[in-house]
Image: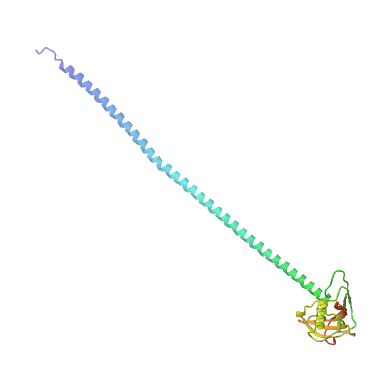
Length: 245
């Protein structure tokens, strides 16, 4: 019995060797799993670490873009404000220049009108085709004597044989005053009647008047024209009323 070989130890050795190989393989697989998991974990960690940088970069870019947009808007607003200010200034200057031009034109027109009025008052009422003659006078109170060939009779409401009347308010008196106003250019409401008297004949009269501001003084010689009324024939531009009547 002692010389017989036992087969079981050999089988146990094979089994143990198989178990060792299996354990080694299991350990190798587990090690590979750990290594693979480690790589996956590291990759995830790197990705997670990279994402905030991308977000931060994007945030910086957005902030820079926002700042650029704000700056552009401010520049545009400043440009518009400057343009509006310049336009307002130019408009104000144009308005002031237009007002000054209008005032200058108005002043020129007023001056021209005053000059025309002065000429009309000095020369009397002139119609087309008439001729005005101005003569110096030897009379010390007369500045000049004016004869206007365009003067016409002023018309009359009287009929029949004419008789000159010197009663204030009468028809003949009023027609004499109308003829004097016609020759001098003074309105009856701007005229003091200093004297109306006979002019050296039954159909001749002389009237002395002055403007209400006393700047214009005249002596007008009138003649009666049958059925047509009193007609101015000569006018003295007076320096003074002293000795004029």
